[in-house]
Length: 161
Image 1: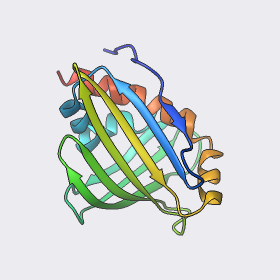
Image 2: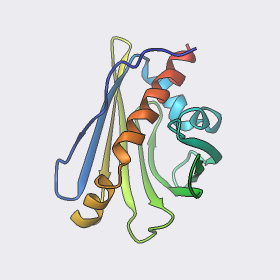
Image 3: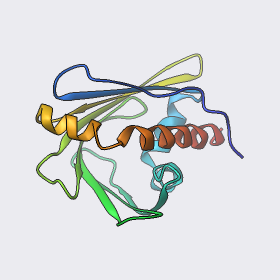
């Protein structure tokens, strides 16, 4: 069963070293929270219909680690990993994120959820170390995969009702 996506994520560049991603979901914040923090649920959307998630580990506590490994239909497997710096259940996660092939270009990501009338707005501010690293991220083609992933994320959250 699938649900129609409620929108498209908006990607902006608020500062020379930042990416801001904003998207509304037709689901309450506590269900979006579950979909982004429970490994079995993350496995359902993080692949963005471009392959499979081989591993999803989440130790959801300050100082806890996370790691996702995926393999595209065509291509080599890759991993992202990091550490949780701040957690406010159903509202905020601040975490580091490292793309394994570029360990020196990690980011700090701040995800916030705000709900109004059963609709949740997810905002993720990606703080890069340099403008060059931000531009490399933006130029990587990440946006098309991210759009597909958040469409699936919304479907997972809606189906949790």
